[in-house]
Length: 66
Image (cartoon, rainbow, N blue to C red; front, side):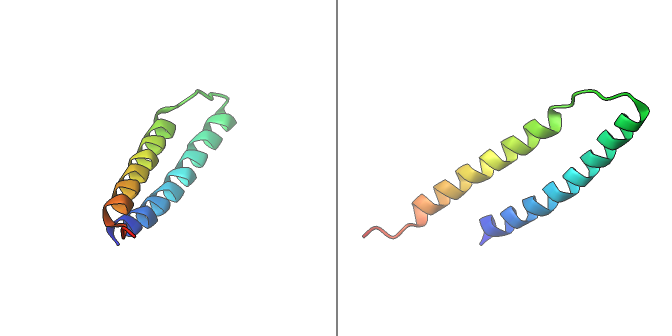
């Protein structure tokens, strides 16, 4: 349950971050000053990877051994 809730919360946060990033990049394009910003991409990738590891560990620890 906690991991499922975390995944849903992460989805909501990612949607908000995507909208914010779109606004920032669109504004920069309109002003002719576009620069690469990899920080947000790295942050999201790390968050997703950590959540994947947590889910794998959880599933291995709670799996029924047949």
